[in-house]
Amino acid sequence: MKRLPATRPFPSVLVMRPVMVLAVLLLAPLAPAHAQFGFGQAVGGISIDAAGIVRNLEPGAVESLAKQRREALAKTGGQTGEASTLRKVSLGRVAAALAAAAKGEAPLPAEVLFLGGLERITHVFVDPEGRDIILAGPADAMAVDAAGNVVAARSGRPLLQLEDLIVAMRAIDRARDGGMRCSIDPTPEGVARVQQFLKTQVAIGDPDATLRRMEDLLGPQQVSVGGVPADSRFARVLVAADYRLKRLGMGLEPSGVTGLPSYVSMLPASAPAAATMPRFWLEASYDPIARDADELAWRITGRRMTCLTESDLFGRDGARRGAGGADPTATRWCEMFSRHYDDLAAKQPVFAELVNCVDLAVVAALIHGRQLDRRANLDLALLLDPAAVRVPSYDAPATVPTVASGMKRGNRWVVTASGGVQFQPWQFASAEGTTTADLETSRGEALAARPGADRCWWD
Image 1 (cartoon, one colour):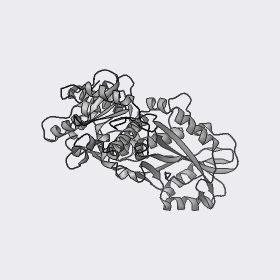
Image 2 (cartoon, rainbow, N blue to C red; image 1 turned 90 degrees about the horizontal axis):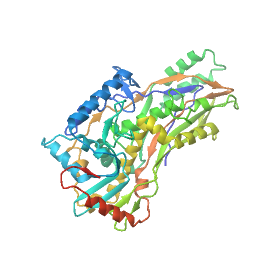
Image 3 (tube, one colour; image 1 turned 135 degrees about the vertical axis):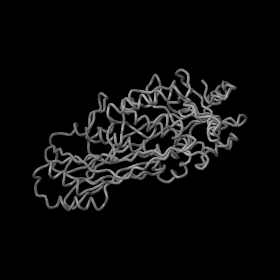
């Protein structure tokens, strides 16, 4: 898979602070319920000021958002019962609820917006007789945490969202080439200006003045999103996760996880004279998807998020990609990040939101690639047609102002981590997995337990 582009090295720790304009244009039929919940105001604990600058949400804003969403949850009337190890959600009934909302017959309840309280999807069952596809996995009652996230009441994990599923299903063909990804990069012109400046610096005088000068010369960096619409909430989750990854690596905020310090704090006091720039990025992987003999039941397991790295080497003739060799400290930090990912996701919800989006993309690829909707005789046109059901559209992130702070260890200047997020859902959905007899039994039990009422979920 093609690796993400990265920033070029500079003699400092270069901290990227994304600027994302998150003003929301809410469109029917998802608009009324989403407006109640205040979606678009914040993703990953990020807020926007009047100038469009991204910052962490102020405590007062966090409290206000949490209060607004709790009130909205109480008003919707949607319930998702108690905790369940295998909640089932009918995609056919979700589509029917969307159709009713599009006609103005009924608003979308929270149980539809949050897919029956699913925390993740571990099974997909096809029901040709019932003309349905069932998504199943662990779930819980809906709650709003202190940061305003709609989460599972017991685990505190963010719940899957219908909006992200619709975006994934509509974008899945586009993701065949290059996967789903985001990155933040300087312009070639900015890199050239900074490199020319550094060639003239025999020694660093006032570090603060030098860093401010580099900020001016580098100028705004560019945010790029691929595989999903840049104006979607899905894309916002990718960018927000990348933003948090950089802040944690550079020590701008604590991870909150024992055993996961910042990359900067792990650097040795002395090292060979050089200026290196580690690139950090996140990738997803799964075990091969198991199925029954008739390919009507599927089990998705082994999901892992992995932090990867490589280094560039900086010299007076510019940056050489990957020439810095393996940075043992960066490699060790990535291993720690990967090992503690689940613990981190419990502390930093945006990393849980990221794996939610990965799950939904894999399910979308499985449904589309295996034509499960046709096998189920289920019409998903409403979910796939932007003219029929419009999801909220957000101003797309475009640029990132460079803010630099310096740290020098021994004779080595440490330069910021760059990177991003990338995954290829088709890689997992198209891989040949094992045929497992117990899945047929699981499917039969799931279909037999389906209630006769129009409720979209059951245990």
